[in-house]
Image (cartoon, rainbow, N blue to C red; front, side, top):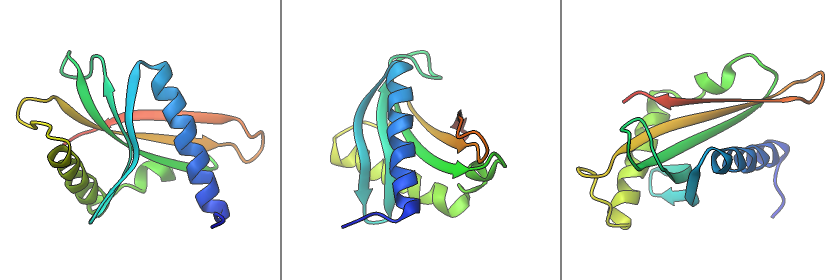
Length: 128
């Protein structure tokens, strides 16, 4: 099945995000984890997250042409609910003890300049 332009851009962005995370010391566990209520783009462990020890990260990736901040605004309350539900399902499926495992949620926004095709990545932790 062929991808639409939007899907192609999203797949490209997820690949760029995964490469960026690997360079930052993350170990990718899974990409495009799906469950009944949603999907998580990247599941990865970081050697030392916000808890100062090995941390399980659930990462949402948004890719946009232009640099207007729309990627950050694309993750609203409903999307966050789906991400949290999917993360819980992932932990259940893989036997991860959520009470003992440091977990953080992150977003990577990728912006491609309309004028120069330069790429800018913005990574931040989603507060829960």
